[in-house]
Each structure stands twice: as structure tokens, then as C-alpha cells.
Image (cartoon, rainbow, N blue to C red; front, top):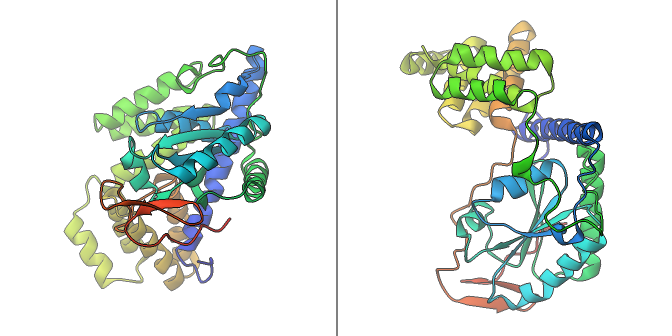
Length: 345
């Protein structure tokens, strides 16, 4: 979809901009921390290809994607095209010398991840950049196509997200780089942990103040920004009468405050698209100060529900436990009917 006439695609575009800004900030912080401590954070070439499962997905892919593009190779032992593609990707990961990290996911052992990405056949190759997932190609693509796709990915990651990749040292010991779960404690970790505990205890005033304390010292802190937006949302809806709020919104479609209150309820209840859609429609209906008020709240709600990579498996998601496994000409394996069209690169 194209972002015209304040359509919902505008939300997606703004969320991507927000993710890019946060990724750049995190990348700059990581480089500054490495320079301050005198470390290089260099990894061995062997660390450029990793096996990932559901338990390690957030640590090994989502967190790492804020410092380097992560290419995901979905494969299975029974998939013959996978046996052609995987060695090529592994060789290119080493050749690209840290400009991307290759994560290999066995779909038979990690079917939830396969469903979340909406995969209907393998091999399937995705990328995650700054927490944003995007499909690259499906099937056993030729090396020339793979190189072209990787070049575009690396360029976008560097220019838009500020991700320059990993430092590779052939002399480094495998596994010797700083792992995601071994990152040194940051200066605000204790405050952020206190804020999270306050949220869990439903002490919303305490959580809001704790996050504000972090942002007073570090205005660009992405975790505090997100946490503050969540805490303020929960505090706003805490004393609302849901039935009255929705009644007012239905009777007063042009009332900015009525629609803002209903959007808060929508988002707090997990209805993200409803919340954004309501405010986008209200922006189109209002003018002047009312329109600016709605626009500001719309931007605030991006901090709660607009960022990140929301992935949902559709009803047509192929499950390898159902139907025969079949490999089609062109290097694609799946179940059921004919393979889908390849992803655009």
C-alpha cells in the first residue's frame, strides 16, 4: 500500500522510521561503549553462522539485529533444495566479513517460528534489521541473485539504520565475542528494572516517574521511551468506563477527545490496528487544534504499538506435520498444492 490520504500504511512507515532511529542510537551506543572500554568486540569467522531455536530467538536474532543485519535460513534435514542453498549462504556469510549474520532455523524443531513468519515452504530466507522482519527470497535461488539481494540488504541496513556490521578477527577464538547475554551492565539498568517491577505491580505512577528519571539523563533511551509510553497508556485507561467511552466515540465521531479515549482503550486491549485506524480517520475529520491533538496522540501510540516486527502466521500457513512433503522444480519444498510465487527482492 502507498501512504496517501492518511491510510494505515502511514503508520507502518512512521514505525519503520522510529525503528531506524532507535537502531542507529543503539549502534552508536555500542560503538561508544566498545571505544570506552578499549574492546573491539571482534568475532571469529566461525561466529558468523549460528543455529537458532525458539528459546534463543529474541537474544540471538532480535537483539543482534540492532547491531548487524541478521539473515535467517529456514531449512529442514529432508529438504534437498535446502542442502544446495545453505552452503552458499554459509560461504557468503564468511565472505561478507561481518556485514551480516546468518542464523539457521530448523523448521521441524521450531515450528512456532515458522508459523509466526507465515512460511509456506522451504528453503525460505528472511532478514531481520533493527527488529524489522522482511522476506528476501524463497527456493534455491542462484548465487548471483543471492549476492544482489544481500548487497541491497547491507546497503539499506547501513544507510537507513546505521548498522555497519560486526568486526571480524581471524585470530579470535570462536565464541569469544561479547554475547548478547553477556553485555556489560548499563548505567540505567537498575532504574529500568525498578520501572519494570513497578509496572508489574501496577504501580503506574511509580513506573512513569522511574522512566522519566532515565529519560532525564538519556533522552534517546529506547527502552525507557517505550516503557514510559506503555505506563502512561495504562494510567490513562485505568479509571475509564469502557462502555461509556465507546458510547461517546460512536455518538461523536468528530470529537477528538472521545476518539482519543477510545483509541487508548483499543490499544490497551491489544487491538492495535483499530486504535491506529480510529485516530487516522479522526485526523481526516478534524482541523486546527483538534487535529493537532489527535496527531500528537497518534505519534505517542507508535511508541506503544507501532514499532517492532509484528509477525502473525496466517490461516494458510503450511505446517510440515500436515500433508505430504514435496519438492517442486525450482527448488522449493512444502506441503499441499503448488508452491507460492517467489518473494520480490
